[in-house]
Image (cartoon, rainbow, N blue to C red; front, side, top):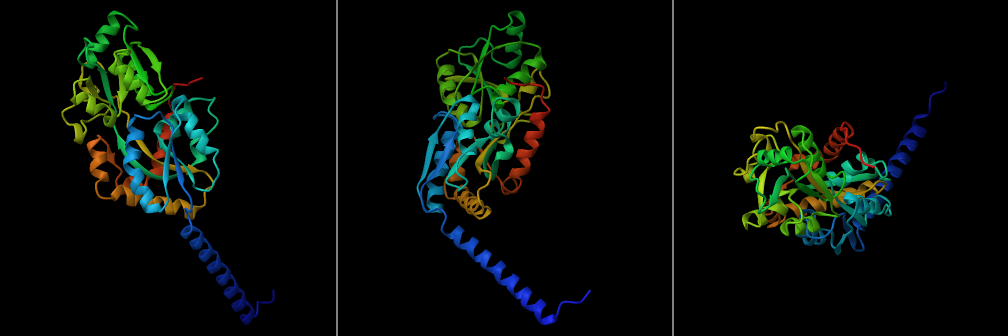
Amino acid sequence: MTSMPHSFARRLFCTAATVSTAWALAASAMAAGFPDKPITLVVPFASGGSIDAAIRVVQPRLSAELGQPVVIENLGGAGGALGAAKVANAAKDGYTLLVGSINDVVLVPVLNKNVRYEPKDFVPIGPISSNSPLLVARKDLPANDLDGVIAALRAKPESISYGSPGMGTMQHLVMEDLQQRANVRMLHAPYKGAGPLLTDLLGGQIDLAVMVPATALPHIQAGRIKVLGVASLQRQPMIKNIPTLNEGKVVKGLEMSGWMGLLAPKGVAPDRIARLKTALEAALASKGVPEQLTAMGMQVATATEQRQFADQIARDEAKARSLSVKLQ
């Protein structure tokens, strides 16, 4: 084989380098011009829930970082699937994003065969917070702890009801897991989000609910509802006074943790994802934002969680696929 002349090889290398540089400059210019119009953040639950409240803390700082208005759109229903599906099918330009959670991004599409999107249909931008949920009860429920609830259910099956933000949500699965471990059955009332659920719990229309600390704590502190425990193996640093659900006599090994974060439809250009990621991290580090989220009972995402967000989603998906619960 005849070797390539040195001068030709050099010209070819220089041409390739020039093309590569041109592509890099073009990508940089594209990133510099993005965004040039408002961005919509779809919250896949009704207003009034913890995800809605948290993103409204981050929203103005994110808008400032991006230099464009950031609009929140609440689209509840089907355990978050309606809003998530809208984003999954949105234009791949980075202007429609999902304020997602383990519920709508992972659990609902994995457990419900009728949902027409999958976790792989989203590109992770970054996490916002994580938490372990609380089991709470209407303030006048006779039982004051989980063992009391279980005793009442064993004496009279399905005499206690619980609400969830939707079928297949983290909250629903916590209660399914609890019932299996305790060998009891409750009545399930699925809602379109945490806001309507909270309204009915406060009004005494349902007995129990699983809620994230951000939603539950203000009402616990005001005496409007009572807390029975946290769904974790150890007590949580921010709420050390609340026992775990595993500290009773019956249930052991119950654990579930949730997260919320920002995601884009699959297919958005990597430079735009990088721009959004940088803006989100800056917004979360802005003065006052961590303090406000912490005051709401949320654990703000750490630098490690930022780096491992895609891995976290993959682990949650694998765990969800191993569950026996299937929704129609």
